[in-house]
Image (cartoon, rainbow, N blue to C red; front, side, top):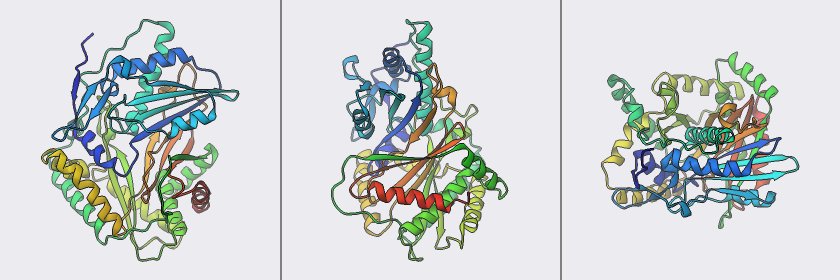
Length: 431
């Protein structure tokens, strides 16, 4: 077995996350519910072995002023598996962050109750995006299942799998780059001119630990919504974006003058042959939807605007704007300068009424990737909590259901207000 190096080079995606972490808690979590018990000892071993199987996960992130890097942790520094004695302990684990500068980049918590087992896989966003989180779950479950029949199994470390943007960019034809860069310039103009963006109100004061709220759209409703969308050449994601826009306008008492903007993401694994990255990494791109001040008179007119915009973007190198336009700037400017600049930009935009509103589609969870001997009865990804006054949610699918998740910080935004917002989204949907 090839030896794992003590230091691993950082990639542009890692450094981008240093800036994103100024307004987002950098964790992504995959929650699974089972109706049969899991083997805790074998699960603990599988999680530990995954820190070697994907070496960056067994590292801490060193924020060096010139160039950050990953440093391997000693075995006594990398405790990653925990057992919760009760629901309170489990929820406390869920709300906790990962100290990515001191700890491994994944943690797992198992809670066994009379209703079944819950397994929560917590992943540092510094090392991985939502697509990578699902790949990590697949790695952990694969090792767990292998250990049942081969207790001495040790996975080969993935030392050659690329974590860089180059695995995407080298597959993009040269003639597309001028068009993508033009898209980047247009996107930046529409994102900031005019600057004020509609949002919802937050209370002032210090924030507590985040809480997570999930709303599950059951399979029959999701199927009906999908059929409704097909008749209008719109995707499920288009429907949810349209409902989210309309709920934001209603809940925030939109004045008809501020811009209606929404940030979302595109998993760039779509450009890879197997739709999976070579290594665990961040390779998602931001996409921004701007309706200006034209929301539409009703849900169907809003949906028509959204679906037309998304069809146009999918045909024109969706998700690549930042990778082509902004990433090279990060590569050739000093890291300490970037770290100092980003909070100032965010503060300026917030003061001028430009706040990040996000709805990220984290994609479907494949049952085979989360089968630990038995298939979960439910699984969903939890969106990273966004620091107020920014606001956002995440979508993920499993076995025909769709889960909308929020990470909020009381008391600036309370659970009751969030539940009213979710009810507004539901009421906007046509079925």
